[in-house]
Image (cartoon, rainbow, N blue to C red; front, top):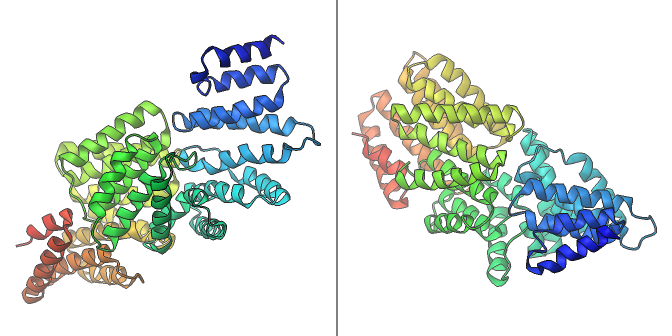
Length: 460
């Protein structure tokens, strides 16, 4: 009775703060034996915490799960109550937790089958995609992503479409953008009509959709990418830390790697703001994502001081991947960055061995967006070493990159043109070099790709 009275007092004392106090109210109701009410308040606490502290949110959902499982078997709503917290725990795995989702998802799939609840299953699949990605089980991740996208599209619910964010992000790495662009347009349309745009699974769906659409536009050389990326970051600053960290990587990690942006003061300022937020939130996934982006940017910046800090950050991020604090699937790209840093100091042999291995892994994983920039590092290193077979290897590497099937992969084609220009120079073919160089400069300026413009202008 005292616990029940105290729960009531906490709620009524300041109704506006009820959500903030939901975890405490739930604990007292549970202690009072009022399990159904305790479940409701645990779920309410999870929803309130999801944008502020994902670890606290997941703790509330685990408590709700425990309560739901302890309810009498003949209770009418027990099955739905058992499904709800499992859905949230699986669906938010991607937002930064080493907690495995597979066993919980298997339980959920069985419960959803019993209840005929396909919507909860669709939301929860995000966790399985994330878990496979986390452990570099890329084929399993692609299969689960395809299954989730198919299920979500069959349900034709924009709210559920939002939950497929990890599946869409994974497919974006392959350069295949059909599903990605459909997801973006559905999400942007839904978010523009709904006053409450946030999602417990996704954070800010509108920010995510704009960021992904910006990626697709620069990847295919279409207009509007700069505006979409800028709007995405502006929205993400008011969303949860995971959304901001994820989009900072999409705006500055991939585009800098592939020559779309240069590392300028604006880029470093945006990344630094994200880093401050990441450090304050205490989420390893957010912190590692932003540090990886910053470390790579500093390597591109090029000064001795920047390179030293960049390699230190990337080494820390690499350790996080090995310790399951970040997806181990990111190791190949991190190792390419670190190998190229070694090559800049003249340690070509070890750097090349490492780069070849990593690019092969990226190819097997179908991470073609990463492979574009990584291949450029390999070719530059081969040309710098200039051994007897290096030029022939560089030629072959570029042709393999050009031969990857992909419709209108303008960003890939731009990098191939740059590398063919460098190769023509290395072969001593001045006529071909001038032709490639002029075409490269024109293409870079037409598309407005700042990194490529700078590289092209540096060519004599």
